[in-house]
Length: 392
Image (cartoon, rainbow, N blue to C red):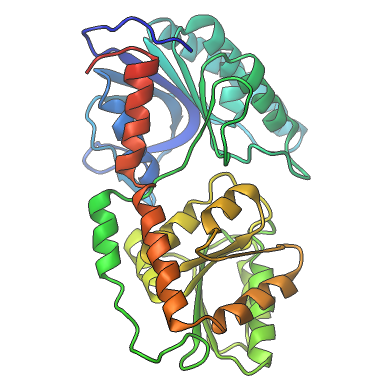
């Protein structure tokens, strides 16, 4: 895409998606913590940001934070989605209201930012193609198809490749040859925060090897579900424990499979469950851990791996392309459908020498330094200034 003419004013950006927003007691607009930090970077390049998203009632959840930017305003969209034919009818009805709300905003937008995949962007991708000159989309899901994937997700990827004709960020290892797709990552820390997290991790005493001189420490963070696959983690911990190797694990998150996971681990004394944890508590657990395990069958960008890498917990993840690129030379991959392969990884970790633990953690720090919010800012600035042609 050729750069457009430079303009002296900082224009209006319209963001579209089903992202949830709340207002706190002070009237500040709040959304997911890491997302708020990322969108603040976009907002810094515009005079006005109009977010057509979903407003939720009540106090914000603990993981939500207010935007730092004061130029972001919410235009509420009707919430719709779910499975079953009734949900589909509600979504069709809501789509008409989304169009009525979004079209006026798109017509006055200098640029548009779509947050796919969701029901809202299924409708807005073609509308943005027609009504907006400068277009950007982030596909925050798996760019590769997977069993059981919704047909609407596959359709949105096709539209972004062939119809959208704008800049697309996707969680891919290398830039695909089609369209304007650029590799993306989802940052969680600034350079300063990364330094602070690193200082919280003390060097282990000389001669202390995880799983040999003390228990191997494992952390896993995520919603308890079939996809997140915590059952495989519990099974692997049991197999390692049966071989006489002590394991301590913190499994953080809530969800429909939590009770089943608790029952499966009931006789494993070293396994603890933490249904609710603040961001600080999650990083404390990452700093404590030797290994950060992500057993999901499919993910978009595995932000939880980056959190662990930033804190020095070596990554152990399901063998998927993006995971593999993050884990390379730092941790291990395994087959999420075979808990015995995770067992083998845990056993292999206990055989790692002290010097190799230190080398792998150093590699984690170097990787984390290139994936901070500060690095993400450079990519956002490139799109706004070099591709879209807006000056600061």
